[in-house]
Length: 448
Ligand SMILES: [Zn+2]
Image (cartoon, rainbow, N blue to C red; front, side, top):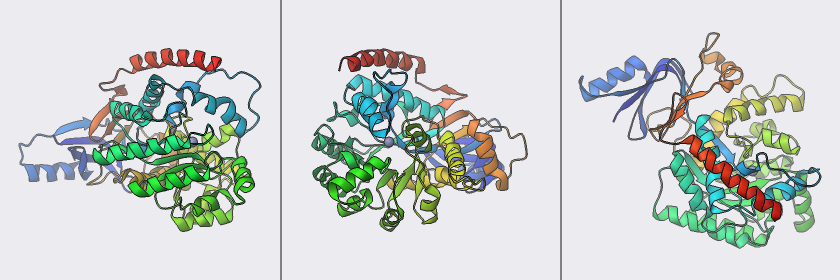
């Protein structure tokens, strides 16, 4: 079935087309342009009586689905969870008091429902591709299958991995699970799901686990996905245990490269940035999460000026990528006390660099509306209150579209959200199951 998304402004995003249209069939975009031109070409090729379905954008903005380069679907049950004792004083205590307790107790049901909720939130926010980093030390073997089920049920794209970690001396289990899942996808590829090799963070991964993970990544030509210098504690640990900084250690183990995702890089120095650049590794900035954990502000503008591909993630804080973009923009200005900064860079991280990152990891032409790209499309319910032009698009994006709701979302040509309602998914029922599972989980965690 050929379908035309029309009656809106197409932001491709390299070009803007007023009264534009996107034609797709079989999950792939086959034509993009002014509506009259696309329709004329279609009927010329297929005959005047050919059938053509339409999706009316109601004068909204037609864009490629957004990409989240670093998510944690498993983080849902932390919402509203009470944490006994005194509040965490620093990043290490945040991990010990909250995240490491939580990820050691997750059951199969918990992993499934804690993933379904943010996956639906991704759709609600027009996000059609995520790169997830899963942690569940108490449930490792087989856990990526549970996440895969949730992703396929929702219908968006995801690159999945399990963050191997030796904090409970179970790094080998994580390596085995990442290899098992990559092997499964090699035998039976999925249209929506792909995989990486996850490592929790340099300071929780011993040399053996690091070397084994690099070997798995090499075997499957997959990317490595690791938290890198999120807090100063990571650097201190690396210097103390290994006599070298985090990025130097990753280089020593051949963990860097064009498919490697280094998450955060808040505390990397100039030399480390140069190593990252020379290796072609990619960085993911997570401004809301960094502010929440009070770990500092990554110098993303410096990294970008060096030519490093820096994308944007939410780190499990939310599934709203437009909000992460605005936060990145505000944080750079606030941190450097300079109101000239980040106006172009923050949107470029979301719309340009996340597409490059996803292109290398998921190996598809994502984040673009053009012939040959998957039909991953969001229609934003945004009626510009001032003239919207190619030259002022970023102003509308940062100060207007950032708060606009997604009206319609398609992934792989399938409509997931239409007129702000989920298609074929009972959101209320999933919420109900999630609340029940979370209540049981909280009781278990209180006893642990
Ligand atoms: Zn993270």
